Amino acid sequence: MSADSQSRFGLGFGCVMEQLPWVQRSPAMREKVSQNGERRFRVVEFAAAFREPNWCTEGHVGYVLAGEIDVLVDGQTVTYRKRDVIDLPPGTRHRRNATIETTTLFLFETSREIA
Image 1 (cartoon, rainbow, N blue to C red):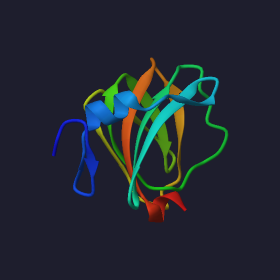
Image 2 (tube, rainbow, N blue to C red):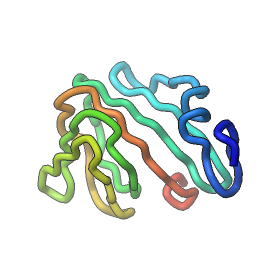
Image 3 (tube, helix red, strand yellow):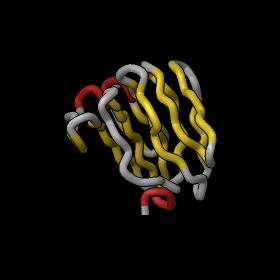
């Protein structure tokens, strides 16, 4: 696969994600999204000022590219730091509690999680 291509079998992450525009979802959260069939890839950036208004029960699998973030997961605080893997199965009640510094996540989702 060439570095600038996206196919059924892979994603030229650097090139594809760099070309996508940032979409501002709230004053303190923005994302880039790439859809590949039933899979969605997101780079999400949370600023320290971001406030999570509701609990989430969608599944999230991802990787912390930069920063540090605290997430309330089933009543306990879990801290994710740069190079940590996030694995929150569908149905797990969670929400962002605090962002210590601007944090960037790379998330993988499937259409079953997106619905």
